Amino acid sequence: MEALRELERVQRVLSLMSSRGLCHTGSGGGAVDRFLAQFLLFMVQSADSLSMEKKFMLVSELLGKVTPDTLEEVQHLTRLEADQDISSGALLQPKKLETHAEKSTIQAAPMVGFDAMTRAKSTLEDFCRSYFMFHGLDVNSPQSIFKYLPVLSFTESYIYQLDASNEDSLDLVPDNSSSSKELESKKEAFDDTSLSQMIEPLDCLLQRQGLMTDRLRAELKSGIQYWSLERKLCQALMRHEKISIDDVIKAIHLKSFDYRVLNLLMYQLTGQQVNEFHMDFLSISELLVEISDDLYDYEDDVMNNTFNILRMFAAIYGPSEAPNMLAKCISEGEEKYENLLKKLDPSLSGSYWRRCEEATKEGGKLSGHAYGTWNIPPVISDEESFRRERLSKHDASAAII
Image (cartoon, rainbow, N blue to C red; front, side, top):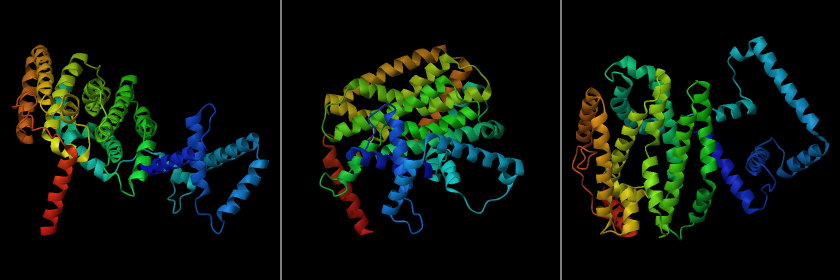
């Protein structure tokens, strides 16, 4: 979480730099601006009794004397110091105090919070019960679960943490609220670049573990695409702007990227070649599950201003036609699913069928991916009024309690 907070601090400074005309205009602008933002954050850190003016004067004088050669000498000295620590065994000793450099290293390491791990739990359970069979693994065997759980759990939790950060940029505030300008600035600063920076530690970790592939990296990037589309579409709805059906269809297909990331990791962890047919079959299954979940969570997604395919269809086709167009989309998806299911190995097909039946019953959903009864809820034609009414009822209930 500290790494995410540090990135948020950098993004706020970048936004300030942009508003003050302090951004670099030459080549390598993004990397240069991030370096300058981090330098400004360093400058405002507490330094005993030194005032801001004093620190500014000291740095100005120093920069007038320092050359690139001086920086290389300092870099060489820090390397020598690290080598001496290793040879003396100092790195094996417990440290009571951490230097600023050490704290920066810790902050750069990939970390996940407890809330993200809690949210990832149900997805991990569903993945193991639904996808392990495609890798010839017995989900009822503890050895099969715990052998791969550290990588799967950390990856999914990290993705949930990034998803939470993206959802923060979709928060609703009244137009006249004193905090609306601050939130709008935060939304503008939170872009694909910041998400790419946030996902880099996970990329590096998987690469160090020998698990990263070009395809896996592309799937992680598709997650950034989904979050970008979610921001674009949900913010357009709030502004009553037109949205593209192409963007909506792309977003619903990208939404299950985390399952594909976990599945590709399983191929790497088990040393097997990617089974393209299985990936295609599971992809259409994932699409139907996402639509089913969206129908089940429709009202909550309206309240939270998050992506929901029924919300999007209502905005494009209108409240009366949206259910018909969505039913057509579901029918096409089911047809593709049934065609692929027939080509699946019979034993695997039967196991997956039973798993989907279990998931539908356990979820208590009336709408279900291929096996339940699809039930499209009444379309909310005026989302703003719906939110006001729901919040009013909630406040009234809270007052009674």
